[in-house]
Image (cartoon, rainbow, N blue to C red; front, side):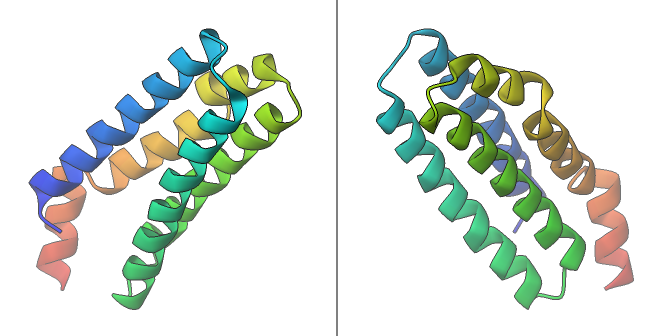
Length: 117
């Protein structure tokens, strides 16, 4: 994956968080929001598996952490607790996991990893 692709992916995940937040605030149908999170979670699981196959355990762990964070938000929503879902999205493990991915795939870290390979 190129650095441009990684940066585009990070941006897309940030926008995804904004979309979920807007859906939660507008009281969109919970099952649709949960399905959207499940689709993104499946994509993150694929990215994690690809990273693990490439021997990039740290990247795989960070993709998994973001997937787990999404599943927690979905669980709050499934219980009908939109406030807890919003709190998890804004201040819970989702923003921390997203930031960890951003740091992991920042240009200096990616360049150092490429030089070490």
